[in-house]
Image (tube, rainbow, N blue to C red; front, side):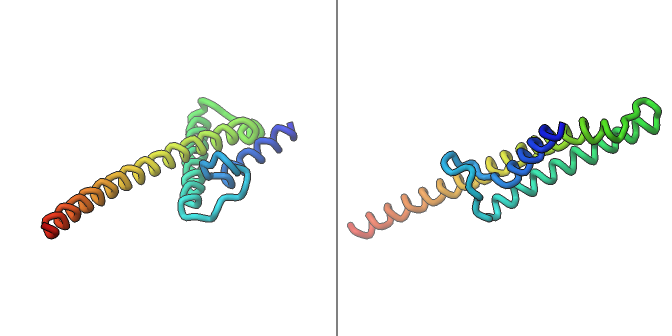
Length: 128
């Protein structure tokens, strides 16, 4: 039990530390960039959402006498699931952020290409 808990804590910590999507050198500490801290924030936000929602749901069920969860069961079973689900939510938020940034960069690249083509046409006309 303690070994499983230790491995779980280790893997959760690794998810927060190694947030880069690097293939080579993936176990080296990533640079402290704004993007990496934003990804960590999304992980924490996802964990906070899933944990608070799950706790609230169990409290409502307990008040209505529909389900009662012992504190030990909650700590050993429910909280690790909520943390994993929170990391999943954070990952979804991260992918959406990266997709939005890629779309913005593509639009900017296309606009730069059109500006360069217009400048080349003007230069060709001026050279004649």
